[in-house]
Amino acid sequence: MTDAIVDGIAANIHTSGRWDRKSACALVAGLTLVVAYLVCIGNEVGFIFFLVLFSLVVLGTAIIRFEASLIFIPLTLTNPYTLAETGSHLHLSELVLLIILAVWIVRLVSARESLYLERRVLVPAAFIIGAALVSFTAARYLSEAINQTVRYVEVLFVLFVVMTNTCRDEKQIKRMLLYLIIGGLGASFVGISQFVTGSMTKGETHRVFGWHGGGYGGLIGATLLSCIGALLYDRDRIIRLWALLTIPFATIALVLSQTRAWIGSVAAVLLFLLLRSQRKSLTRIAFGLFIMCGVVFLLIQTEGFGLVPKEAIDSAIQRAFRFAGSGRTVSSEDLSIYLRMNVWLVGLKLFLGHPLTGIGVGSLRIADYITGRLGPPAEGMGYIDNQYLQFFAEAGVIAGCAWMYLMYRGLRTGMAAAEQSKGSSLQSASFGFLGSYLVWVIGSFFWVITPHHELFALLIIYLAMLVNITRVQKGSRGGT
Image (cartoon, rainbow, N blue to C red; front, side, top):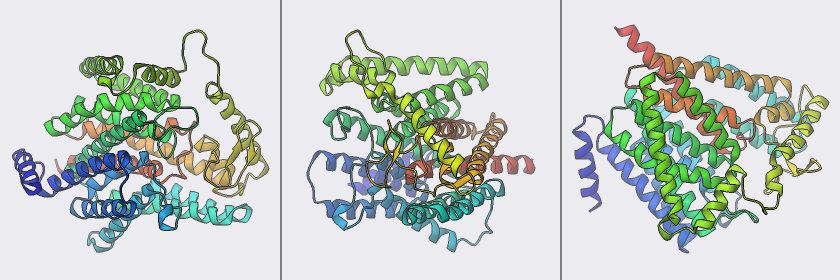
């Protein structure tokens, strides 16, 4: 039966000349994993059995259709599992990235083509890694400093180099866009199911918090922008269908995440992209947003077809945008911006006290947001909630400036990709990846993303795809 499904999907897709059987296999594997994941959340199953099955599916997908393995990165942002049963503190999400990285490295070693190195990105990355090594001299927790520096090498260098040397043509870039949309749809389903069951309730707050906190909202926001780009500029019916299916669920998941920083970032990026769009596109965007808002309003006001009480949805909307009727008491959630400003001041003082070396990468963890007291790098400890200031405070002025230059370099690359791809089949991908990248750039003023494999990896993937789009467009112009 499974073979029949795969063959049917492959046959239908093959008629458009865009996909093959490997793509269909990868798609079926991804959808199967989403279903299995939801079942595992709702039912008690053997953990080791699930872990082995999960790992085999990820590995098989990466081998059969490498781009499809990216589905699992956004999906595992919502996972509730720490692999304590294996005798380690490894997260399931980190296991996924390690499996994918292993396949990447094998593909890289076996490739016969010469490597392409984007020096304008790799040079600031090298400065960040070098500054992280220097910060060892001041690190309070050397083991955490080593772990964080290894992560910089994994993501800033290995991941970026492999992605820029793997997805080098138009079809691969468009497949990446599609798979990340599908992964965002899966993450939306998981997040909504967590809200319904209350499985990720954090303290007194009923919200889709995800394993890595508010970063879940950033992922969903990036997914929404990719979907809007696909609906506006892509002629591929498969991509447009997935985008249309994803938008309502992703919008609900973004509201349920109750993260104003990411909601505001998505709104700002969408406005920026709207102002750069052609007049005809503005009309299509406005029409699409009208439909999206109508669908979402219908869903939330009909109690989610009986699955979610209207009161729970109303409470989520109030917390997401911080408004309510009279009688609502003010909680610490409403003071989040003031608490952030408090710890930002702590970070600034730490940087001024150690401007060259910082206090050591991985050492800036907040035990008390009111007093600004630092704590050990352990579960439950918070971050300074500003990625830019985090680099300055932890690794000094060189790392901070290098990170800011890296973000600027990515913005320049994204703008070039958007300009060069106008009217081409990659216009939707450039719109989607630029929007996703900008969400991370803006949201990083209110969150720290580098300690988390998936958030950090997604940022670099968006950047690598923008680099690849500019290379493809430059090659097509050179050949005409």
